[in-house]
View: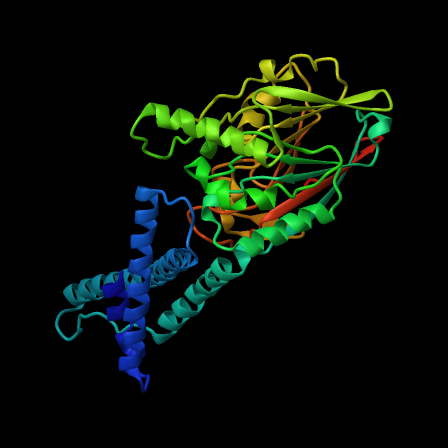
Length: 407
């Protein structure tokens, strides 16, 4: 791609007084990109317990520069395809009309090159922002829900949901401290965490235990496991190490005062009325783990009139939850991160995630049951966020005739 782009841009560079400087700048950018690729591969091979902001910066630059180059190449390929077709047309004319018609490639159009540069620069600069500021630009989404099934005693009940912490990706503890403070400022009655505390190894959370232990609500914090929490993405020397890692993760949940629900539930009582928080283990599309067991999780809470289900992967909702005999008024999920890239503005949202997950961000309804997919607190892979901000969701439940806006 680098050779193709530089060759295609020869005409554009000729117009610049400092052509050599422009070429040198491109080579430097390419070198940064290759270094970022090295860090990316190294991270996935070695699974470091904590991220480093320099490594994250180079990895993010690699992704940004790759997107920049892919867009440029797309522009050039379209133009070159047209040029090839034009040569073929001229060759046919020469055969038909005889000598006198010159056959050759037309020169590249400066407008195409400049348009390609302009279009490619938009995601490039956006991604640079995403890897420096956007990844910690926590947004609080207030979601009012009026639900006919909610007991009157729980009218005004406030739930703060966070998901996909991915602590092994964090490179700024001050930013995490700010995020935790922002959650506490919402004064929730309960905090629900819907999985993926770490990337590969339970020990990733160690530097941040003290911060997440500060999470505060009237009732407490409840959590479930996500696909990354099982240690399946790390190569362990012995199976015993993997099992020890899972035990360690559960221990860290306890140290942070996270009440981990492993296919189980807790019943909340207020003024003699009940609601249930049901937590299942991860259940996703293969090859993701399918450890969630709704029947086991809801045991003992079948007669509770209002149920909230915590299930990490929204695929579980569409495949198992809706059709299950037990009615869950609200399911909370995460997992998708909104792919950390897209457009998310009032009235319109788009992300490549929608081509993988029908329910990828926001509120959905089917058969009188609601699903909310949180966009995630952290990040993984691409160390940034572009257009899809990290999310803290605050639900305020009201008792009455069903009323909600799908967002």
